[in-house]
Amino acid sequence: MTMTGSMSAHTAPGAPRRTGKARAAERRPPGAIDALDRAIIRATQAGLPLSPDPWATIGAEVGAPGEEVRRRIEAMLARGIIRRIAAVPNHYALGLTANGMSVWDVDDAHIARLGAAVGALDFVSHCYERPRRPPQWRYNLFAMVHGTTRAEVEKKVARIAALLGPHARAHDILYSTRIIKKTGLRLGP
Image 1: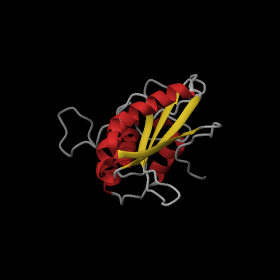
Image 2: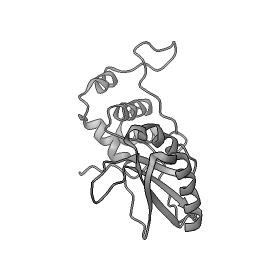
Image 3: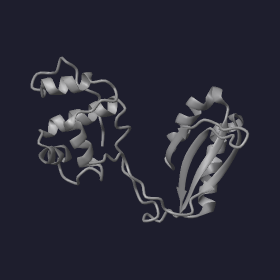
Image 4: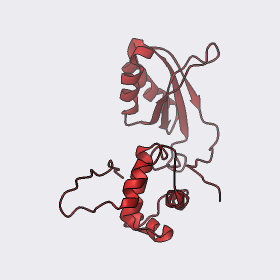
């Protein structure tokens, strides 16, 4: 699914016009949500509905037009209330039972560029930078790699090592030993 940025105040002829509520939602402080935002988050906590128009389906549940739901979600993404919308596959069900988080000690001067390159590899499901915790933890780049065997994962990690070259001073692979339930944002009652 592709998410776009907020619409401009000057929309093309025939494009949906933003309501006063939509404009107000875009001007809210970064962490503020109103009752409709909260209802939308609750309606999507278990995932987006599998329907031809998920925005309209959610809108029917929360009492808002589907286009308003889409705009609200875009605004919450832009404000950082929602970090991303993504599929969360069960890798084990797909036959990918060797799952390893590769961890890397990458030169800080190159981590932004190299992290983006690693994250773009088709076999890396997610990649991110985290702070080091010396002396116990020297690693600052994390890249999740999936495979059917550990040997397959190790070959993929070797490709990452080649890409990082001398900017990676050390690395390791932390293999999953069990499935942990993955959930997104959850709001209480």
